[in-house]
Length: 102
Image (cartoon, rainbow, N blue to C red; front, side):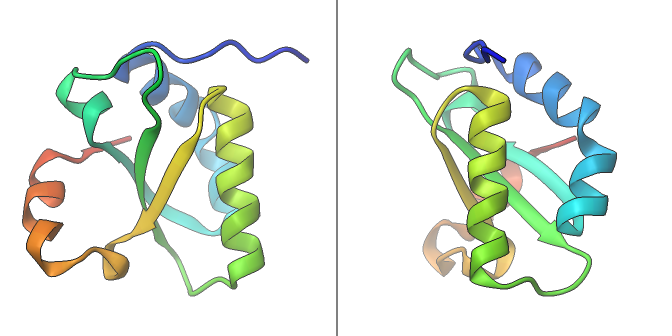
């Protein structure tokens, strides 16, 4: 299966929406959103997609990495995956203001 590269915030949202139930069942994703250049409409050809994720319960590092790789396969671009708890205090408020949840 050849995956096409996402181009816009809408592309990312559409793909995540289609796979939302699978993300919940397979990885325990409670909430997922996009922040950074895609959420601001400032993405470039080489931009990664910044994704904020909340889980129903804590997951291990291996499952976290598997989720990141799964999202990269779905979206066709590099994904920076982060949890709310991992956000640094100095940028947390900005990210939480700009995140677009699916």
